[in-house]
Image (cartoon, rainbow, N blue to C red; front, side):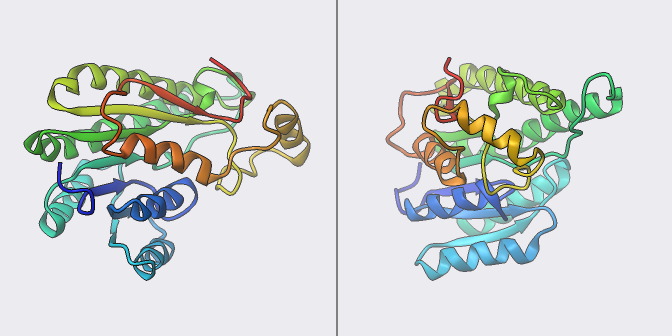
Length: 251
């Protein structure tokens, strides 16, 4: 890997929420950050401007993580500007249906699983050559507590993220000899995100009541777990899942 101040991190879906907060924190930790976005160019530019105003380095790069050609263009742009790629934080949200299994079509469930896995597969394939050449790297996938603890209406998200988490474990086993760690950060319900308003206030209050720490997660709580996995000091943790849910579920 490159020196501590020169490490390069790509954060997918980084124009808002968990992704934007993670991008800012990684910059504070001395990394050059790629703020990937799909449509929110203005928001991504604001994240970059904020990082630069704080003395960091960042660039906004548009790419649909479901499209191989777009991902490859993004990676080439990053390598041309900054050389290697040390960290991938795959956070981009793939749209999904919130409904019961009885009301769901196969296109909704199967389509979500396919899109989720295709994006994870494609972004990983794209960054691996650079990490392999430099003898190490950090792959971090944003999962969800719904992979292990079902909640009404969330079968598409929970099932697809469960597949991604197992994918990450297989990667950890295979890539460990190359110095590449692979880990998952699995948040519980998170405030201040696009999906925070899927359920009503009464539902949120029940979630808070079930959380020993007495509140729901904020994006910064998730970002700090990501930053730990991304750090060069994390030399011996791979194939793990960090559960960021305030004790709502313990396993």
